[in-house]
Image (cartoon, rainbow, N blue to C red; front, side, top):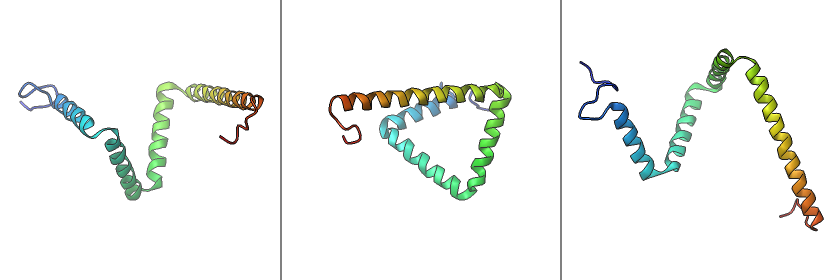
Length: 109
């Protein structure tokens, strides 16, 4: 019998031990640690595999999403994104107008 994630040895599965270790590292080192190792890993992958690697995984990911959610998904998220941008622009214009009405130049804080 092999010891995999479904067969606990010593009362803890490999998955549980990994989770517990990750939580401990997270608590001891904080978010910045993960950000830094992520940056280092990203730089290494970019250097070793090049730009084409990212194009390829992006293409594969896009194809997987299209297969699982359908092409209309992209239309839907594009529409939602456009609505959000429109909303943010309207808010910014309203803040600028309010600042001007109060006698402030909104371009200079």
